[in-house]
Length: 216
Image 1 (cartoon, one colour):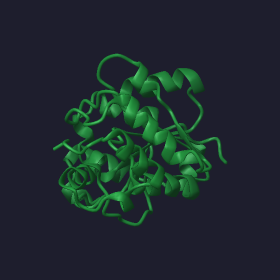
Image 2 (tube, helix red, strand yellow; image 1 turned 45 degrees about the vertical axis):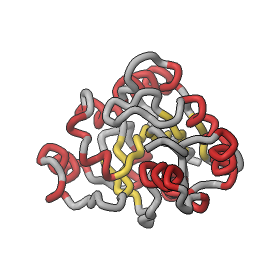
Image 3 (cartoon, one colour; image 1 turned 30 degrees about the vertical axis):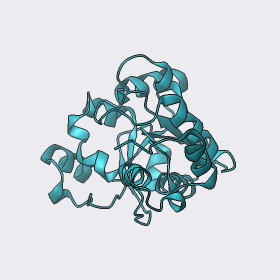
């Protein structure tokens, strides 16, 4: 694996097959390990349906036998909202300013990046690694003008990610998948079929702890 470090943040409420497919695609395309990072209090989303401890446990089960994927639980131990800028500044103190660092996100997050705290500093501290999501096209005409300008100026190759600390944007080639955490929670609450959308260990955990059955 390369010296590039990839951080993949999210609520993971719950983690599902699309999350894992994106993480594996980043691992394989960039030949780098990926750290999945559950947020304690996502400032850009509604409250999570499952507790931080349950979401962390499900994430650990999901990647237990998957090489190159790891869990980074730092945001669960930090009080207050899980601001990405705080996490990246903390990471930079740990790994230094020279090591390549990439922030992996879905295209839906890229569409809202201009609302994130200190988003321009985020793009300086790390590369942005973006995976397409259903309903969130990556063509710049659908993006906020500031984000579209960033995409236009900073789009780069996979090799560039490994050669510089941050500042680039790379479109991760990954097949679109139907899974989404909100739809998954609805399926569970409505008694519809849902087990095929996530690893069987996670499905067992959800049944064992009676999660999401009255979530929404």
